[in-house]
Structures are given as structure tokens and as C-alpha cells.
Image (cartoon, rainbow, N blue to C red; front, side, top):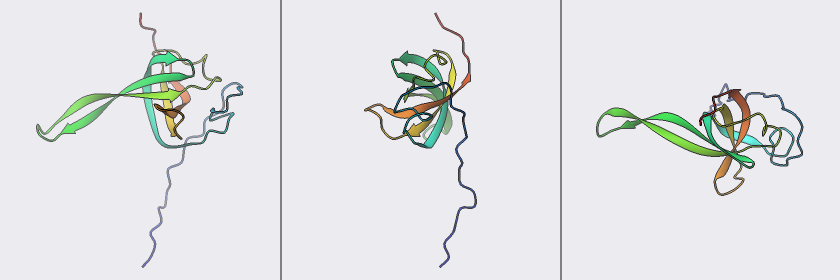
Length: 119
């Protein structure tokens, strides 16, 4: 039997490190390794060292043979070098990492687009 090798592996996008920080859980300046899934979403809440993003996805409902929109909310670690750049309403890219706490399994990689502040 021959082993089948994948010709092309998924390569993660190279992102430049913004600013300087001394955060040990920073993917740019610390020891945190990123792997796995990558998502893009809008920041809906901003906490101390953490953000919550939300994005829409389509789910197939077999009973009705139709698609339904569903929103997913994910919490991600916000390193100190990106803290001043990212605000509520911005679109960001997050990537999976090791579990950092009970709800945080992702880390912010970069800011994609600025959003509008909602009042």
C-alpha cells in the first residue's frame, strides 16, 4: 500500500507584529502558538484583555430543506500591543490557540476594517 501525501498544506498568513508588548500570551511577542481555525467577525464587546466577536453563518435545516441564518459569538484574547487599535464595531481576524481560560480559545491576529461606534 502507498501512503497518500497531501500536496498542499494550509499555510497560515504572515502578519507583522504591531507595537511592542511584554504580554506572555501574545502571538507576536510572547510564547503563544496559533493553529487551527481562523474566523473574521465584528467586535460587539470589549473587555480587559478580551473581546467578543460575532459573525453570521448559514445552517441547513433538513426538515424544511432550507437554509437559516445563525449568529455565532466567540471570545478572544486581546494582547496589549493591539489594545489601543481595536474598538467596538471593528472587523477583526482571530485564530485558534490553546485554551487560555474557560471561554477563551482564540487570539486576535489583526484588525481588518474600522467600524462605526454605536450609541
